[in-house]
Image (cartoon, rainbow over all chains, first blue to last red; front, side, top):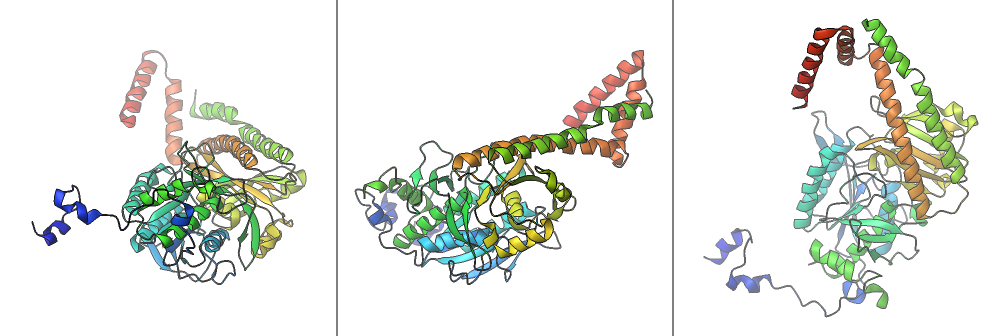
Length: 277
Length: 211
């Protein structure tokens, strides 16, 4: 079989003479440290998508927003994606964008507004927004939101898996309420809960999933609407901390797959190897 | 029993239920207010028909004027909490000028801080529970406590909604459900063999519909 023919066949198996073709770009260090994981990275070249209530353009804590779109239900009942001139409908998306920007100052931010138009229709709009974000190939997608609707769980699961294989990392807020909710429970996403510490670069791996990581989520000063600032608490603010850290890691190592990235997050977590440095 | 008498019997069962569930909701927000040492607490119910949030219960007597107040379900922090199912704590609402102005116009009172948590029952988001201007310093444990209150509120709200639906049916506003009520009334009037046959038919119908 010629080289061209082999490339057209999905890699469902690995013939002996193809082993060299899947060599990793470089050897991993004996010990994965934060210095290796992100060093002095500022997130350059990494596209981060904020799937939320929109992001206020020109907010001093957010800086440049590369692109902003919003999703709404069209007249034919199908969701439509359009360029967004409105900015933020409640302040939350701006807060998340500001947290990511503070950690990864040189990453590129894209806003996908899926909230603010009302409760009715919010499920299909969320799914359409996520689908669009995955199609664009954003490196990291921040989802400080969840749904409890069973009818969306299957589709969300498919989307989360497709993101995982397309190298888009989904970072999703965990839920601390006694209900089943998604997408944070899926193993193809990185799920985040809160710790009470004040260091944005302190994160913990949870040996008792489904919540996999804890990041700063209490008493955080964030960007809000009209150039303002607020002090806030919630898992939805812990999530963009992990998003920002992922952007730093992908800035230093763009080749990392979501699987590898989650491993690096684990190995450098404060309660694993990250506190020894 | 005639259809009218059947309706009267069901109505008697429902009588006062709205008030009782309303009292339960009020007691939930009163306890939430007391535990967090807060100035106020309220429950907003989602009206799915109009896609609005409606104030259903308040903790303080002087806030009773807010009952029935409405706002679009996608608006502000409460709308965000409802749609994303994520709890949130905001320490300084007043530095959010747009929000403050909006709330002040509606309520005449601008809270300095708020905790808001979605009221979830099974897979449905029924509304939002808010606690305004608490005095204690915040911990993650408090968020869990608020979540537990929201769970109680969810059960109370679910009961309230069921009672309202039943009332709606009794008033004949819902033609399909009223047909079921008439069937139940007709069955209730049967005696002896005919009653047995009627019950068997209903069981068969139930089997058929559940398949």
